Image (cartoon, rainbow, N blue to C red; front, top):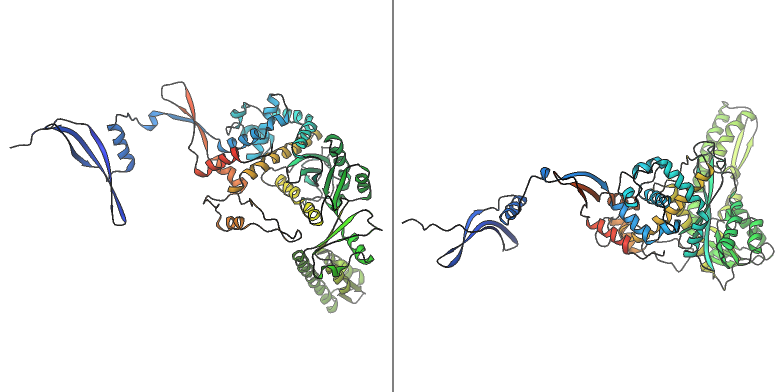
Length: 579
């Protein structure tokens, strides 16, 4: 007797999971439900467990009534543009009200300048490259400047420079208040070409001797945010740039009291007199090496002070009336300088020994010829002052000036800060920490010249364009400074650097930062990044323009962010900022 035929019923896919011991088994069954004798029964039609997961999902969806077509026929991706890094930078720019900082009134020029700032923050390059990159990411469409060319960008630069004073005034109102510490230092960048009036030969911090350069001075607040920048001709000495900054702080920024922290290169009698004559301006700087030696020779500075201590405050009324002198000794710096000096002396002695052997063999004779050989050997490592040289037509001898070398070694690691600020305003430890704050300006210069901003080499020919280029780099640094602060949990940056009780001691990283450096992971397990590598990671988050077949319309869709990308975007949108 045959089986009674069953009525057809709805088919579906059932997934079962069974645990046996430590192992888990999953099966996918194709089943049909039907009624028989008034009861609902189920029949297994096939075991689908051997099929790939995507095929099983297709069967499950088809049985649920979904329609599937070939992916190529379903839609076409017309274009895919990097978007994540643009979104992050624009979110931060809007939180900082960067557009309003440039100008209160909306305009195409303002949008172009904002595009150049964000473009340099994510991929620095020439104006031609920037114009092209507006079409190579979502930046152009986000700001409505798609199609702008390099001439448009140059015109926007001119517009930006006209507003520099107002931009700096707004930054000062945001971040400076009366009694504030203001950090100031200068750097230089080399110039390609010889047609710009600002480009002059001078001391090159880039190691490009014989290449024209420009000088720029940067004012920052105590945490290191840039407030103002000024460009000077390349031959100008550092100290000549300071008077303009004092005038800017007191007149334009209308600060009644301010403390200027400047490098020792700014110290001249004229500058100190200028600040002394300007009501409300105090200063912190450092003595130069000859001045420290003079203090020791006069007895005002007793080196025995540092047998037990590394910090002392002294006075020298004759040479430094109404000033506080804070003397510091860093033993790590002292050991490093001693090691370097010995290496240079030994290297020079090797060269001199080779010349001595030539003279002794008679292959080098004549005082003039011996002198020609000895001169370069003494200059090569710049320790000529530490050797006593005797040359005749037939002999050559040399020896170290040991007493002079020891006198220099006694000052290894010692630096002296000088300030007009009273102890009621800043105690001794605070003076040292304030001067060390100049490292924030040095960090800014490193970013200016590094791959993050690429301020150099400078190719602009017009003086105003060079000034606008430097201003643009400063504004970009303002944006990236805040991005770095927001992204600190994802970067190698120390989120909470410890403040040592001893201000002279070498700065140390927190245990959390040390773990990040060792493991290359954040505390939550995410890969740790540099600023540039995180920008590159965000750039892989794209916006895709999709067109349906047979339809003229298209739509945009962002790819799903990875957990790291989502975290970076969230931090840019929510991390505390001071706008």
